[in-house]
Amino acid sequence: MRKKITICGGGGFIGGHLAGVFLKQGHAVRCVDRKPQTAWYQRHDNAENLTLDLQNADACVAALQGADECYNLAADMGGMGFIENNKALCMLSVLINTHLLVAARKLGVRRFFYASSACVYAAGKQTETANPGLKEEDAYPAMPEDGYGWEKLFSERMCRHFREDFGVQTRVARFHNVYGPFGTFDGGREKAPAAICRKVIAALMAGKNEIEIWGDGLQTRSFMYIDDCLKGISAITSSDILQPINLGSDEMVSINQLVDIVEEIAGVKLRRNYNLSAPKGVRGRSSDNTLIKRLLGWAPGIRLRDGMEKTYAWIYDQMKGGLSKDSVFNVH
Image (cartoon, rainbow, N blue to C red):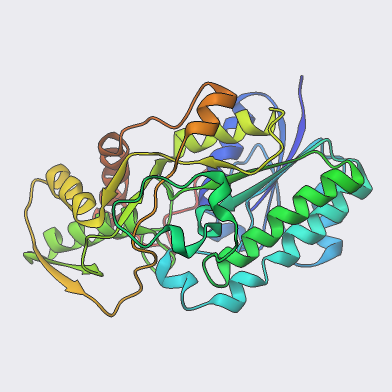
């Protein structure tokens, strides 16, 4: 059945990819983002593209007019360097989800997907590099990432109560570090996979034999390739899963191991300079996929090495062409 779908944050990395999937499936897609459309990561000419500030209530009503489903990926966020230094800006994203939920209730939107984050998890569960994997219940007692994590946790609760009190069919996924082509790789909002690719490529192009790594490189994470993320969003939104659920890879690696992978792809070995004063986040974080496997019979499974090879190739092409975060994302 052809649906009318609104993607909030449609000019962003995940939103741009998601719009492409829905358009290929034959749905009518409306992409909404605050950024000027010339700065969108991907812009699809066969979608309805709107520039609106979704922190405003009237903009949210306009975004959801006639929509069957809403996918809320809109947030002021970035990698650890951004969220540790912009806590108030991250918190203001609560206005987006709140106004969208009010509009969804008013307009009778059938399904509402909210993109939460692994940053909601309690800090005390992430103090060791050998993290056993974060289970959904580990978000409480609450002590999430300051700023960004608190906003995500509060917005999860908003989704729950709008479903319980008003019947808005909300679904929530906790993303674990999504990466892939057509994402930002410089400028301060990039995440570790793209940042490491950029640093290795820059070293090669400059003929330098060194790379700066934030922290001691022992901190651990899991990284989910964009294709797994898109499949998970669709499956979770159409499911009967009411609680927030992990959407991430359980292939945990250290930052040093991530650098190893990129160096292997690039065919280079660099001297590592560790910046211990740089933002580095929690000590260890990975996704426990027990619940999603039980409820959906599936979990993200694209190998990090495979996803990074595609991501590296794309970033290399952009940098080789002299492009940057300001000139690379106008895709039609």
